[in-house]
Image (cartoon, rainbow, N blue to C red; front, top):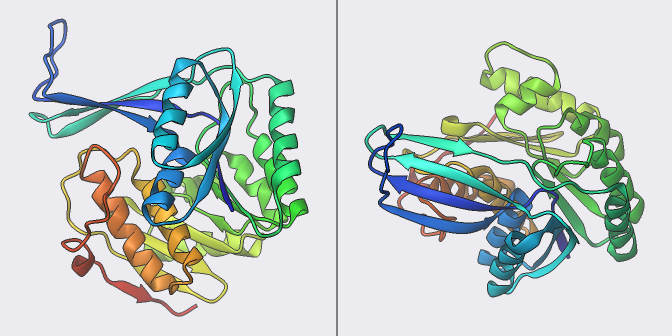
Length: 309
């Protein structure tokens, strides 16, 4: 089983408006409420591709109830620990006249050390060597970034696979526990090694290979408008991104990760997994919700090239 962990779930309020002016009533074109959180999105994508998962994490209030309801409506199992304060609501506003997007991301509820221990105990009593754990995104208040290291240690002890999509610098401290896959974007990859120069393709490979030497098994790097790269001890693959009009980029990386994992679970070639993952992530970025995997217009635009290791 795949367990997705979201330690700071959210409801995303996505607004489309013609204009956004100060100190006046801005009447919008439309809005959507979406159950969200990076791990939650991975579970949604896995389900769309026929892969079961259990969506887990910590949250609270009627907002978490909305997230759980949205997952259950799609037939996804859930097991969230609840705290007193409500799960956050984030706001993403697409302003048509400006052709730009505004993102307002709120903090999550406070999570006690006791609740964190209960969550670790749940994983310890549940995971087997056949499982995969995907931890994605930021943590709620009260959960320190080094909780990521505790998760990595526990997952390794249980013999399961560990996948990480996080900007915390503590990602580096998980490498001694041999994570199966890391999914940084190019800016996060640079930050892991305090690199402040231009992120060229060669530099992306160099830094990803450093992660491999430190213990990571596979690295999937999202490169924004440039596409994505996959690096491990045997392969260096790059995929370009198709041309799209960006509407809401918030869930594109989650879509890419979920798609890539699903194709690996289906034993598809890595090159195919990378190509479809880039197409799906791009499709999500071009709409207000997640991709429906109607990718026929995007896939022909994407080429996967392998470079010498």
